[in-house]
Length: 86
Image 1: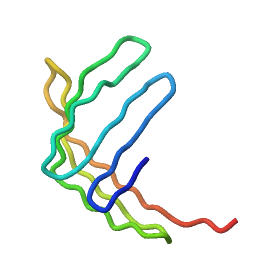
Image 2: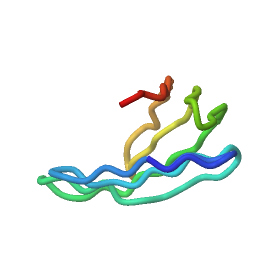
Image 3: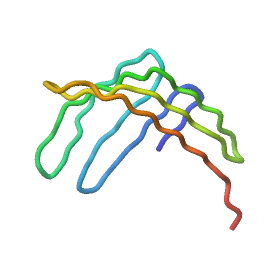
């Protein structure tokens, strides 16, 4: 995961590979690779709220995800980030 002031990128690697980019007002198209084949997906964020600092914070996303030939699905994701002391 990469967090910027106004954008978030979620990278996934393993049996399924993807890179999803979330920035309000920006539609992002990427490939979602699975063992069964690859899908081209479009992510359309409706809400990208990022309030994160060196101590942790919160990220809220509301977005539509659409694969070619399929209806878009509405999603939401909330991340609560906490700093852990070693």
